[in-house]
Length: 377
Image (tube, rainbow, N blue to C red; front, side, top):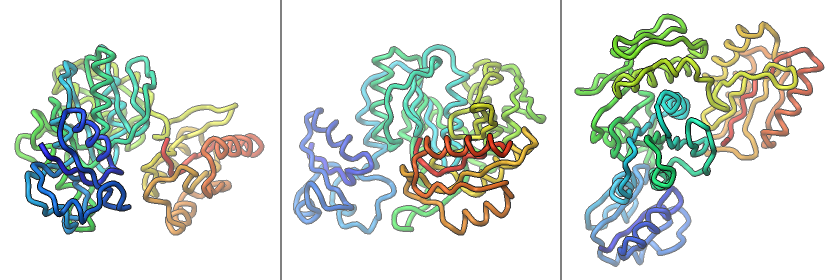
């Protein structure tokens, strides 16, 4: 078949390579930088299939090229090799990484955990590689599962899922505009999730046939109870983001008929409000790509409760910044509302350098550290 792949930056190049290996005649267009085949040349050709990401502007001329149109998620699903592992796919505006780690911690046997923080073999937490969470990267996760003989795959994916697993999880009802402001991100995610065998969504959404955590798991403080799959306690539930992740993971376990008890041993994930002691200094690490004003306020409240100490706030965007930066206005308001003992601005510096500076300063001031740098980890 003749296939046109749009957007080589966000996974399109991976899809194009996979299609070529399959024997298809493929043209690929970098719709942002004009590299590879030009849009003008592509418009003059005929294609059986055109595949593009859900976030591409529907007004782009190549989106209307005649042929069967598939999203990158749908094309990825077509290209996946046979795999015996049971698949759980996770998407959402917030909380998907934390939820993915929590879900992986409750699964028996060997799991491939594919997230924005890296792709790991669980339960030993062995890092295999780091890829983006564009749908095309799911191909690498499935290949890893086959190579490792994994029983499960837990995959975090952006802007929807491929729909190949037995369980799809939407972690947040938050919405924003994509595709040059012409589409709803939440609608795009729900469209892709509709093909999942079983669907788990936030309590705030009412979707026919979908399950919600509150119907499967009851919670009192840090204790979680299910009717059929046991109970557990985890003090991470004091943090709103972790409370939600633990609820989703417990609900997923119920839907999969698994014991929830292992969630009592879940210790969190790096950069997602993870508490540790570094050289005698209490540190709450909340440095990740989703760091924002709201979760910094939650982190500050949690750290104050846990340590009772004043803290140094490390804030801003690192040298490995994400697409959405941290505005000066948001930083100023966050500093005002958290009342730190002192502030260290990231100003594009490396995460390790910032952490060392903060811990050194905290030892001198007898403070804790609240590490809230917006960065890829």
